[in-house]
Image (cartoon, rainbow, N blue to C red):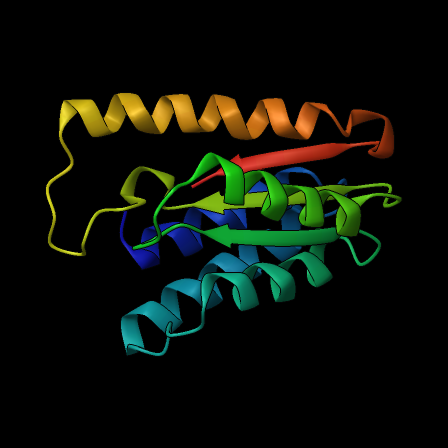
Length: 146
């Protein structure tokens, strides 16, 4: 998924969890389309997500993990997810955005094979199982895989 499609998708997902976001979402979508059209959509996905969530739900907290080009090692991922879980705990609405998991360990021009897709699905399950260990700390956790 290209970066512009990620912006569009993430905007829709963040708006869907907010009870009063319909008008804001429509305006934000137009703004995103204009920024893409003019070539100004160059923000990082993490900055974009944090700014958009402030529009939709200022009481919520969001964390973003981007695995693009990173090696996926369950041991290190466990520590990383544990730290993020601690930062997300205590919020009425907590959101974890995980992006480019299917591209973990693959170069930018690398091919996504069937074996890699299967590994990506297993990695998703691993991340979810790690987060389930902390479910008592979350009142409402959303995980968005982009």
